[in-house]
Length: 336
Image (cartoon, rainbow, N blue to C red; front, side):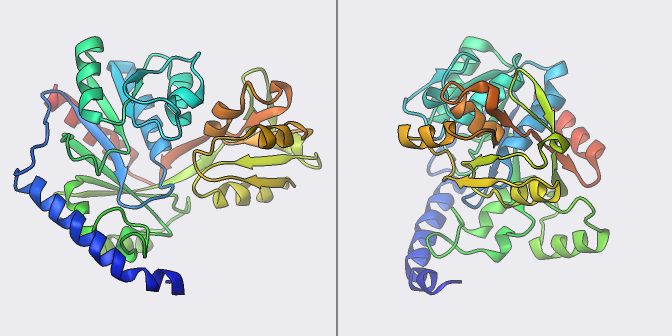
């Protein structure tokens, strides 16, 4: 812990106490949560920063959409609008947020909506679209609604058990909050994570008897895309490239591109960053731009598409993919 964060530790204790009392009031049903008669799955985390919620939502969409009418509901971080809004592929990221727009572009049959008030958003989706199930994106701390299944994500190199409350650490709520999750996924693991290390992590997390643990990793594509064409990474070796990232943790992306032999100038921005006209002008001067999928949602229309490309990613499980899918299928069938 840095010196500054040590100085902030008393504030973290106070914040932790406030959140603990809030959670206790919900647990004792003094403050009411709205439960639902249809399947609602929440994907979230205990910490701030990128744990891989977007790839998990996309994994669930890909698995569930063939046999279900699926809706997603997000807050729409970084958007300039407020309230409920249905996402169409013609929307701009500034109006709905980059991640929901990405969901809609990749899964056109999905019903994608944003609303900072999840209770209102769920009601509108239920009344207007009648989905078979709803996926809540980053709503683990939104306790006004009670998901039937909570999936909690934690990064391999930053487990919530090893963290502290904000502002001394990165936790949004105390570690005890993990008890609300029935599935915990350790994300961004090495692809070859061995069984011994998996069991060590299981021991560290000290799971409850009703919780299942899974391990996942990020799989990068070997091509970049822009909707018009694709280029293999091999073809990019030796090219003059600007890499633009506006995500919480771009380290693994940087390592993957470097390991692929690609040199680049890295233009790094905060998560969900709204690019200014000056920044857009600088990016547009690049000969070739590679970015993430969600940054592509904000940059397309601003930078010439011929030289703007994104590198797709997928979340994959180290093992037990069928067991995870079975757990999700059983929940959906039992809750319908």
